[in-house]
Image (cartoon, rainbow over the protein chains, first blue to last red):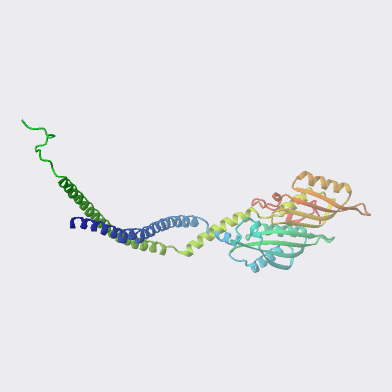
Length: 179
Length: 211
């Protein structure tokens, strides 16, 4: 009798062990550990790639002339810094022979879209100014603005003539900065 | 002489219960073997799973530690510096590609406009679609001078859709006019090599435009 009961009992115990220990452990903690290890492996591979790329980027950056990096920062600065810009424009106007007045800055929200760049990365503002001077002075001023170390786009310019050779100008400039 | 194995050695028939008992004995033996074998395999599997789980747990701890060390070596300021440098380079390239330089327009208008035509007012505007609109008003010494100006605008192709309107002949035979036109964006595109001639900054006496 026991020769039949014991094997059956062994089978039942086997089934019990499988469903209460082997399968839950395999599909639970072991599966989770395997997933975590796979994730860690991916992260470690990414960290390795990052270290390699960081070294490459550091090498590439050190190959750039620091003066050029400074100029690049001036070209697209980290902040609006419109006060310094107004000072610079005033100095440029004085050198060009223009007399500036009524300088005003307004934030612009559509500029990034118009420049086909990410709106979240670059900020822009419009600077409008009035000026008085000769045509030659205007051209010198415009030349200076166009070649300014800080990027300035002339968006709008109005000229009103006079018989004296001294004209009135309304100029709207767009300035940019990196957000 | 030996008998062939197919010929029964006894004429007494065997009982059916003995055959069934032998079959039952064989079945019980096979079942027992199967049951104990399965139990053994499952035990081995359970032990394997147990140790495999421990090995995996140890491996995970080791990987986590390694990852934490790798993370610690990453300086967020360095990353931010690289990201901003990349953004600055890319955005600067894009913005420089769209950089506006009206010097090109003034240079052209000085060249093509007859000396007998002058603007009294001029308005240039660039919209967000990079379309450049020119509106102005002026005076020409004669109708012919205005016609020459109109022909020059049409011939150049950089000042498009030039429409002269509000044409009024004054008492001194001069002609007042208003001008509306679109400017080719290439005319105001900034070129790093384009330098403003020094003459521009000194005198306009020889230029053909006067305001």
